Length: 280
Length: 157
Ligand SMILES: Cc1cc2nc3c(=O)[nH]c(=O)nc-3n(C[C@H](O)[C@H](O)[C@H](O)COP(=O)(O)OP(=O)(O)OC[C@H]3O[C@@H](n4cnc5c(N)ncnc54)[C@H](O)[C@@H]3O)c2cc1C
Ligand code: FES
Ligand code: FES
Image 1: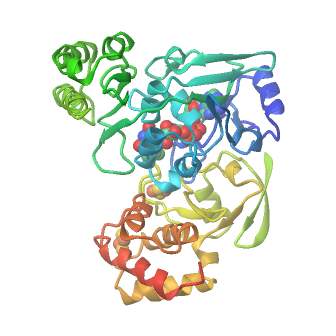
Image 2: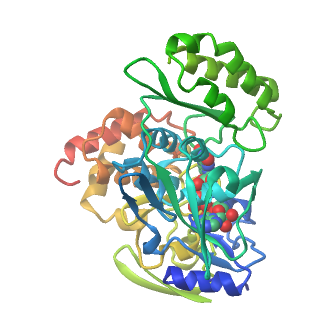
Image 3: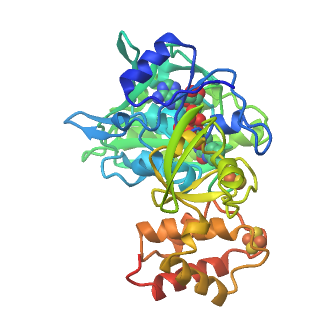
């Protein structure tokens, strides 16, 4: 039988991770399904597990003038009901899994699982999230987009643990989230869309973001395209719509799988983008 | 082998076993709690729900280690409470039970909701049941039962 670890401090967890090839487990809502065997038998893991969720040190939501700091073992139900959680992230979490699953699962798990259909990543990409990766000897901060390199691929090193997720405060007065799934809860996205913008008093677009999941190997956010729109008046923006749609049409590369197919995904993605830009 | 300690229905439990085991199996096989059922085994049906520190969780996805130092209540323990009696009366009154296999999970989800929000709207009741599948009733009578329990049980939650 594999020996698993239940550390009582983050320091102890870092030491174990430093010495041994162990698998981190947070809420287990991805891992316990992926490693499931038969009923009544333990799930099958080829490495010892290092349980993180009981580390109270990693359960917090704090803020200062510029940034929201989320401890990596904060569960999604806590985030859903917390006053400081950005509205777009709340909208997304409300349609993730079910209350019973949200009470145990984490953003860190959703991030490292790195599914192209992960929902929380929409907000993390749009809000320029940063991750604090900690190992026994050092700590580094990386952007969410550089962290995820492909489906289920990340740059995390074997001795690192995500300690914190940082979200810079940014105002958005247009928030449009739409998830298309087989049903409202307990459904993995066929695709999902998040559009954010801040339109100022002079009817100019200060900031503009579009993120899509499940239409490419990683989530889609086009920084250069966003920059072509930022600073435009709503009037001038109207003339950019076709170019904008074309940019996303070129960038997305949807696939056929058990949840949907490429034709549907492409059409639905373009419809959602059009709906967002036409109601800006 | 690692030692895990938790409270089950108010009583202290200490176990020495593989802590990656599904909590559902530990409850049913080691602790004789057969109220939680296995429906899907992958987090989608809610038949295995139990209360962890008062909130519903799916025990089929929960590694045993997760409950260390926490308070667990199964439907067996919940059945001894005043709140349960109010819910039971309401489920019977509204005809909310057919085959019954989903009902322990439905009651746990209802308790978890009323614990957070003693005066829930119909929408929040439906949201709170969103992770619980029932193949018999069509859900409406379960929603009605929870509305009735919230009214008749005022002050209990
Ligand atoms: C019924 C059901 C419905 C679901 N619905 C949705 C949904 O609607 N949308 C969605 O996006 N997902 C959904 N999921 C998937 C899953 O719940 C999420 O991906 C969840 O956020 C995973 O978090 P966790 O804490 O349970 O991760 P775990 O399973 O514990 O871990 C996942 C991965 O992250 C790694 N990891 C965890 N914590 C850390 C850390 N601190 N540092 C480094 N690595 C770490 C683990 O090693 C593992 O590789 C659903 C799952 C189920 C079972
Ligand atoms: S058996 Fe646990 S959710 Fe279905
Ligand atoms: S009463 Fe039969 S599944 Fe709900």
